[in-house]
Length: 350
Image 1 (spheres, rainbow, N blue to C red):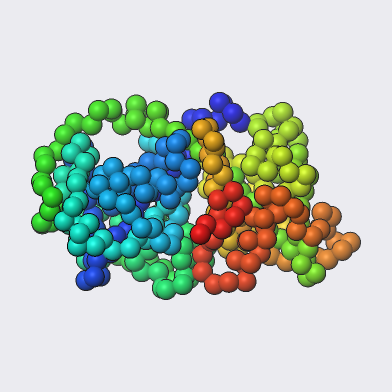
Image 2: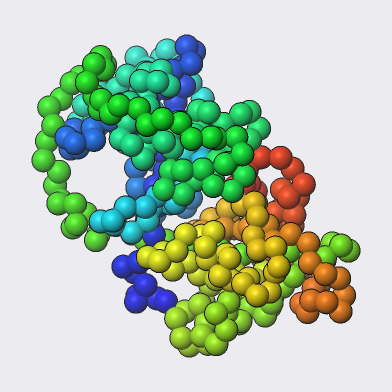
């Protein structure tokens, strides 16, 4: 909805999970955070970051003075809180730091006051509750099951099958941690919380639903249509300004009203009354760089199989263009185990 949506569109952030040879995980102490001082390396998305991976690499370089070798996406979390918009939080696995890198770590003085490698149990107690749940989900996920899909740092979708609830550990923060790289005292942050949140760049979150018929054709709609029928995704002009507005057709979907719904709820809204089975697995996450403006993140959910010819209008072969490339990649993911594939501009990440 353009400028009118700025206050409720989500933020984005990316963190990095650095394991060591003993099965432990790196955590850091933020000097400007006295209540919840322990974090994993990473930080907020900036407009100049082409992708969340770029955010993660940049933040690690700034905070630790090393270049992270990122591996697989570990999880995506639609993180909620009462005092801010949702944050789409990405966590990435990284290659262990070498002995040379560890000896050359250069902590950003105005950000970090030390680091330490901790066990899974120590991380669960030291990290703040939401981040603790998020990291624990990544550590508990079986091989090949990720990326983990989370809402408010709790498993949803396919992730619920292999991540049963656990008792909440006692919160210890930094107590008992033997930090390396200095132990700088807490400092007052340059901005108060509300000002900081108000000045953070937003992204736009959208959903698409991939449904096919027995012949393999996909359900599409006119790219000018809107899931709510009548007004467009720009908030009332009748013309869609979503990620696929330039395409002739697209998968059914909607812009996420981030102040009122999660992506799964938006997907259910988009196909309500059109797909009997609703929505299933999260198949893909497509990041569309903003080119200096707001980036877009498209969640693609599985809509299952619909009736064949004569039963549902709008069935056709996979279209050309970026929306078609995204649909083709998600069709392939539908037949594979694990969580959503990570895309940039419709193409799988290397």
